[in-house]
Image 1 (cartoon, rainbow, N blue to C red):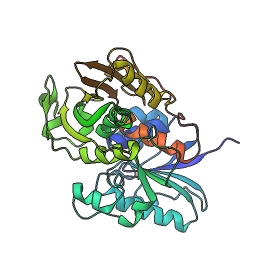
Image 2: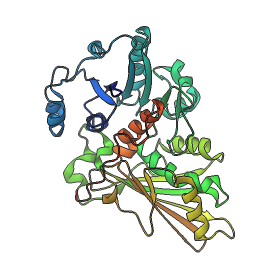
Image 3: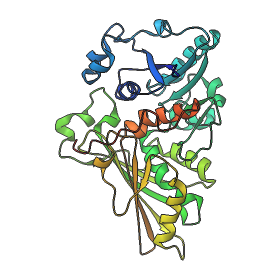
Image 4: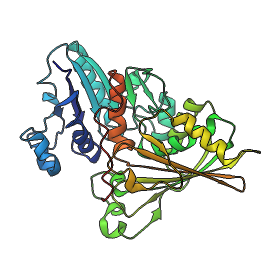
Length: 353
């Protein structure tokens, strides 16, 4: 009999939750035992996500009190959290307590920011006091699977979408002596990065045929990138980040620039990225410049590099909801359970979106 591990998705009705459900519907090992939503409990998954109606039939969202009704004591459980920042930690803590009491073997991947910082002080410096489960922090680690060897902790706080793109671009530069560590990043994100709840910045008439920066040099994910990049490279970057809202739904296009150290040639930059990602199944170093349509709706990332006049430019594209959120979470969960990292994630980008 083939292996089967029940999966539970906390916060199942947001965009990230919907992407998790989409990816898990065709996963060879994880099967969705419960998708949690207090507001939509009892509603079929297909009513919130019509594109998933065929995959899930009559399966409905359930309230937290019934999250584990279909899981037997002592089972293995893959627990995903797509709950919002600030709310995820308490939800994860409650779920872990119940599953542990039932002798279940559990791994958690949290897509919120609640477990991305190694210390409570690091979290509070960005998000303020009031972490929902500080006692759980030592059981979590964070970083990209491409930069972390093995499974250092039982659970993972998956980096955010902007962080994923910047880390892919920055870490190979920082690991060597290619640059002095001053990084200048500009990234354009699609409207799904703002979540499912409507707000002025993601309203279609405002976003369509428009492009604008927000929180320039003050975005709260910059400290996350600096901390995780230092953990992966051993060097602390001085990051200057300007995020921008783009007129498309999915994807992130990043341009990261840095001063090249004396004597560094383009071949040295390409070699650093080839060394970093030569064995990474989802990261491709391309000739020329990467394109969003080559990665949107897939777990792939494309990177291009250039050098001129002492300036290095690294261009990186990902899908913010897949590689930058749900796909990255599934990739981590695969590793935590000792599965092939590519399980459930090999679908190609559709290109003509």
